[in-house]
Length: 125
Image (cartoon, rainbow, N blue to C red; front, side, top):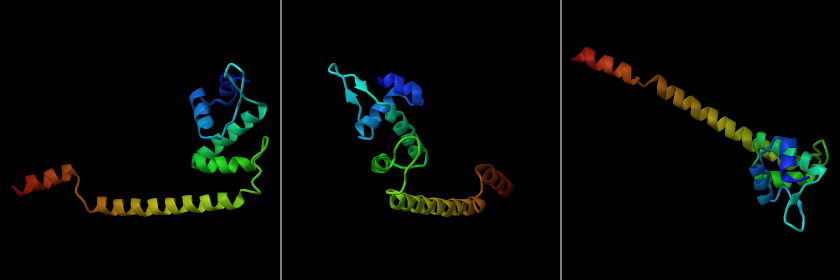
């Protein structure tokens, strides 16, 4: 199938599919005239890429993980350690962001808003 059909079948833009190819996660065959030709398995691969992107993984890691995927389902046996490490990294990032948000909440609670500041300044003059 050509790139437009793959885009239609997966709901992914042609531009994104070209980006996936550029990053090496899609490797279509080419016709003698240079048209990309994708296989049925590329439909599943694009769905897997979309799932992994939605999970917050970067394209480099996705390229590694795609070597463990096959067909309609994710076959994670060979990738479990990499996915667990990525999950720990994401969990750490979430905890760090939650802590930062808490610090900002505390700072905001002790800081006057511009409207409060104007009322306080008016009352003292």
